[in-house]
Length: 138
Image (cartoon, rainbow, N blue to C red; front, side, top):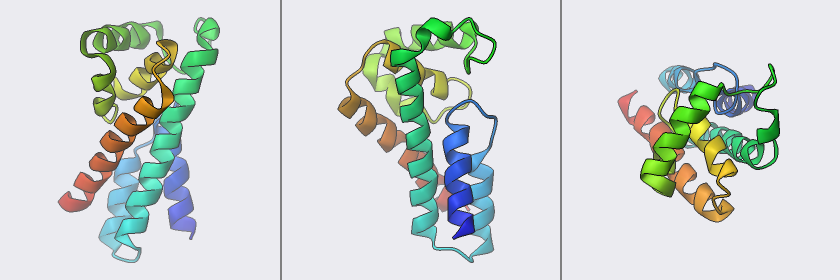
């Protein structure tokens, strides 16, 4: 059970402010062939989706703190993600799995008040597909 919990925590953290690689941990657990593949994908996806939801809430409620040192996204990341989001709209949420720009996009979706259900569906699809694809590669 420790493996699933640790994968969940790392996946959650990787979707927020901490520079973790949930993909590497998932691949390691998959290669060990000790754990249930479905449960590994589930816990990695669930943690990562919850991390994105955390970012969405940050976008809604905490934008006023963006100039604070502890704030998880730089102004450059926010500007780049805002341009991306304005160009592609809510469909850009399908690409939140992309390194560097993905997590700030979830934050921008919150600042732009994207409806939660739409956010959840698009983000979940992208995140689950990423982990599923990784499981196929391993």
